Structures are given as structure tokens and as C-alpha cells.
Figure 1: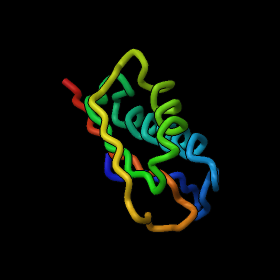
Figure 2: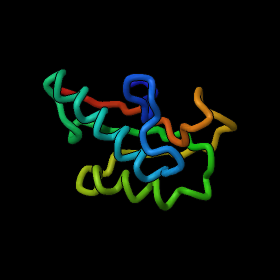
Figure 3: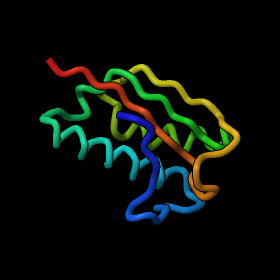
Length: 98
């Protein structure tokens, strides 16, 4: 999955709340995987781009809620900005389906 953000119909979801943005993103990734006949258990790696690394616990909490039993390899990297200044998190996910 290419970089996914917390946007729906051009509007940012969870403005100012990295936990809510992360949850929304991971739900979106899950829906996209389901449309392809896969699910979150197929995810082997995530890359999280965040605009404020000091919020890592909130982002990690949401990530852990989706992946606690799957435990894909994960990276979190602070970036200067995302495409919309209200976005705090962007996630890439790699999944392997047999």
C-alpha cells in the first residue's frame, strides 16, 4: 500500500490527533486489503512517516491495537511535513499474500 493518510473526500480526519489519524489510516489499509482478498495478517512491514516524533506513543498505541498479534516489521520516521499541514501521520504497508 502506498502512503496512506487520514483523508476522506478531501477532508482531514482527526486533525490534531495522531492517535485518531493512525487508527483511520490503518482502518483504510484494512479495507483496501479486504477488497484484494487479504487482511491485516498479511502485512509484513509498515513505514510510518510522522511530523512530530514526540507523539510516537500515541501513534504506536494505535499501531499496536491493529498489529499486536501480527507484529510486522515497523519503522517510524519524522518528516518535516506531509502534503497537508493538518496531516500528522502517513503510513505505507507491505503485505504478502500466497
